[in-house]
Image 1 (cartoon, rainbow over the protein chains, first blue to last red):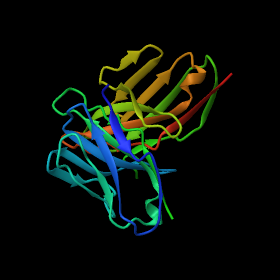
Image 2: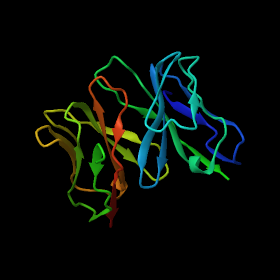
Image 3: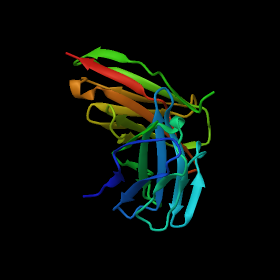
Length: 114
Length: 110
């Protein structure tokens, strides 16, 4: 089944404790991205990647890192989480070079930073 | 001014009603337009792409008005299961950073 998976789905952590949220897709998509969704603010892009070893900042990259060592994986790293990073996070992937740039979203990771 | 704007609603309609949402965008170079549906606390899912000629999928019709820079979504014969948030998404030519609207909430009641 074609899908985007994220882990963990729920995470409660404390300020300053490094964490990684994994994202994996099995559709061989070139483009992957991370979003956060907050009430009243909608979906905002954090980072995106056009392909392996190619990453770039989105609208709200501060406090986050990403890596793209393999095509299928695009982990989101919070080196020193803070309470303002409490949010719902979505990973998405998109095939490039086609007529549509439809995004396929993962199920979301709900992060709480205390 | 936000690049993509939507009326947050909620639009509260009875079953069987016809309801329409608009979404305005500010970047005249925008080239790709989509409507996504998001259920509470779930991931967004593509509802339909929006083409210049407009497109229809069953009870759903999407239209693009480039001159006035807006897209619309029309839902006919609303079902209870249509209750969700509808997100407008716009991508500019050559950019891979899609801009999401904040969504329009639809509540269909019996």
